Image 1 (cartoon, rainbow, N blue to C red):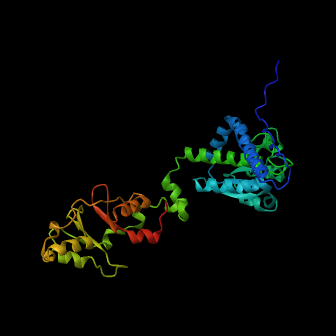
Image 2: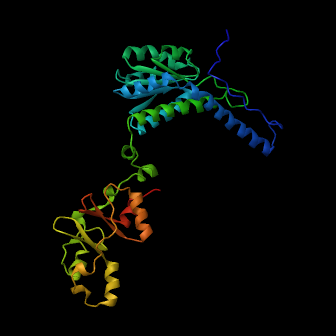
Image 3: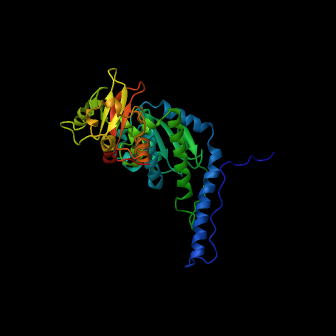
Amino acid sequence: MKTPRRTETKPRKPRRPAGGGGGDGNGDIAYGRSVVDAEIRALQAMTPLLDARFAEAVALLLACKGRVVVTGVGKSGLVGQKASATLASTGTPSLFLHAAEAVHGDLGRVLAGDLVLALSYSGSTEVVKLVPVIKKIGSKLVSVTRGHDTPLAKVADVSLAVGNVEEACPIGLAPTSSTTAMLALCDALAMTVAHRKHFDRESFALFHPGGSLGRKLVKVGEVMSPIRSVATVPPGTKVGDALRRMNLPGGKRSSGAVLIVARDGTLAGLFTQGDFARRALEDRGVTDRAIDDVMTRTPRVVSPDDLLADAYRLLERHRFDEVPVVDAAGRAVGMLDVNDVLEWGVAF
């Protein structure tokens, strides 16, 4: 009877190019590429290891009523910090607990409703010392190690494996391919959980209010001037009166446009200072005309739920300074000014 082939395959060790450790630039490039290739092979070898245990781990994270407490030491601990941050930013409450600090009192952070995600490539580091207390507290334990036969994997509720990885370093010792595989496995776990939770763009924006990531998902309704602070006039208003309404008392700046709003709140039109300047060149008596005769009846509009970045593209494309904001029923709810967009900050 043939012995079954092991699934935890070892990627080939990167070969040192001819020339050794000298100053051969081409040799350095070749060696650098061999390191990257070795780490790619480690990922490829790990992919078949995502089996039914992976689905069990996802189920445990989804069922967790508390937080996912990620723990580890050394390079695995650094991977754990990133894994915890990724979980937290995609809708799964999480914190990182350094294994060395945990045995000196920080295990008090772990509660019965939490789930502990323990990372240790060897599966025999200080993390193993935490297991009896974690079990006593009543938390579930998911391990990520090199295989399912490590001390940590054997005591976990669910064990995940990255495989017996050969490190991509000259002496085969520095954590390189193994940490890359571990990081990818944690990303797969976090993203699968986020997918199952239907984590959406709005939730992402909630957890990323700063930086370019958050600004990409800010909505028009968060930045626009609400209708109560926007210059509005009813149909039939004289142009001169409409122009006076553009300068609202107490406003942070003079508005360059006025919205013409019908009795039912729907937007009837838009009139800007630019419209007036163009009309005045042809008709000196334009101020005595009804606004209905000179307004733009079907102006371009945006919705409060539109992304601010998309609205900014509209302003830029058509060289507008303002754009009306209307709801699904066509009712005027505000105005978006290009200066407000620029003050807020927008990212593409």
